[in-house]
Image (cartoon, rainbow, N blue to C red; front, side, top):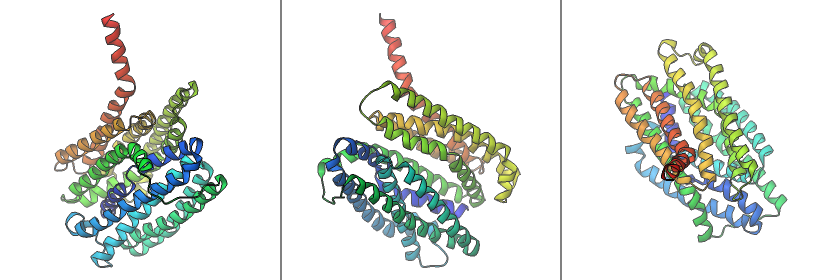
Length: 389
C-alpha cells in the first residue's frame, strides 16, 4: 500500500499538469455558456479538449524523459521501465479526460447521469481491481486502475454526447484565443493551487517512503486517506453542485441561503461520519490488517482532518464562484508549504504521525486564511470605518 501510494501521488501530479485547472473552469464556463452563449458552447468544449491535449503531450514526453530520475518508485516488477512509465502516463491521461468530462457534465447540470457514472465506475473498479490485486499485487492494481479509468472515460463520453445532442450542440475543435483566455482566467489559479498541493503530496510521500520503516508508515497513511476520501464523498458532491449554483453573476437572497446551508450540511456530514469512523476504528483497522498500536493515532488525526477539509472544500468554492480564485490558490499554497515543513521536521521522530499532523495543521491554517478573506476582512474594514467615524 505504501508503494502504491507513492505511485498514485505521481499520477495525480501528472494529472494536474494535464487538466490545467479545467476541473473548475470547465464546470463554471459550461454552465455560463449554456445559459448565455449556447451557440458557442461547442467551441468552448472543443477548446477545453485542445488545451488539455496539448498539455498532456508535453507532460507525457516530460515523464518519459525524467521518470528514471524523478519517479524511480513507479517502476513495476512485471515489465520494463518504459512499459511501467507508459502505464502511469496513460493512467494520468485517462484520469485527466475523466475529470474534464465530469466537469462538463456538472456544467450541463446532468446530475442524474453523474450519479449513474459514479456508481458504474465504482462497480467496475471493484470488480476489476480487487481480483487483480489479490492475484498479482501491485502489478495488478496499477493496470487495473488504468483499464477502469479508460472504461470510465468511454461511459462519460456517452452521457456528454447525450446532453449535447439534447441541446443541439456540436463540439467544434477550432482554436479560439478568446475562449482559451477565459478558461485560463479561472483555471490558472486553480491549476497553480492543485499543482502545489499535488507536488507537496508527492514530495512528502517520498520523504516518508525513504525513511526506515517509511513504506509501512506510508501504507498506514494511505489507508487513512482512503477512509478520508470515503467520508468526503458527500461534501465533495455538495461542493460540485454548489459551484454551479453560485457561479452566476447575479446576486439574489437565495444565494446566501444556499451558501450557509451547504457549509452547514457539508461540515455536519463530515463530523457525523468522522464520529462513526471513530466508533468503527477497531473494525476498520482489522479489515486492513493494521496494528492498532501504531495505526490508531494516525487514523484519529485523519478523522479530525476530514472536518477541516470539508470546511476547506466548501469555502474554496465560495471564493472561486466569487471570482477570487487566487485566494483559493494562496490557501492551497499555504497547505503545501506547511505540509512539506511539518513532514520534514517530524519524519525522523514521528514517522507514523508526521503526514497526518502535517495535513491537519495545513488544512486548519488554510481554512483560517479563506475565512478571513470571506468574513474577517470585511469585518476588519467595517471596524476601521467605525473607529474613524
